[in-house]
Image (cartoon, rainbow, N blue to C red; front, side, top):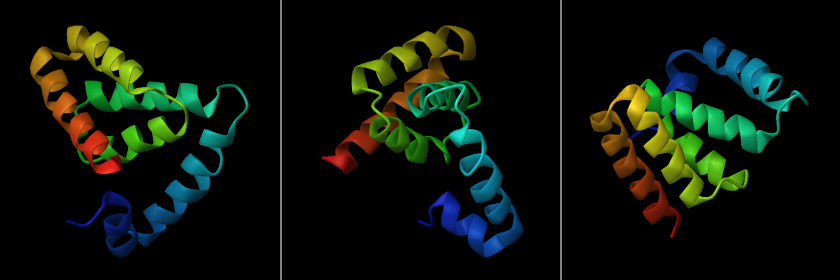
Amino acid sequence: MTNPRSAMQEVAPKLAEITADVLFGDIWERPGLSKRDRSMITVAVLTALYRSGQLPGHINRALDNGVTKDEIGEIITHVAFYAGVPTAANVAGIAKAVYDERG
């Protein structure tokens, strides 16, 4: 399976460039929030919107940015009451797959 970043680069290279330059090169680098906080917000928003294609990469990024597995579980639990339990249950499975892959 092609990861979303590779697919974007192949199909919409300008979008990939803008995403790299603006989102990850500017927005993620702003000093107003830590990368850890940005990761927590991003996982919460992607969970609420059930953006399953984006979640594995951002859960990995969150772990790399110091968010713990327990905190990710709390994010999923909290969002369940705003976005729905079925959505949160599916995201829990995505998180588990990421954890398993990381070892």
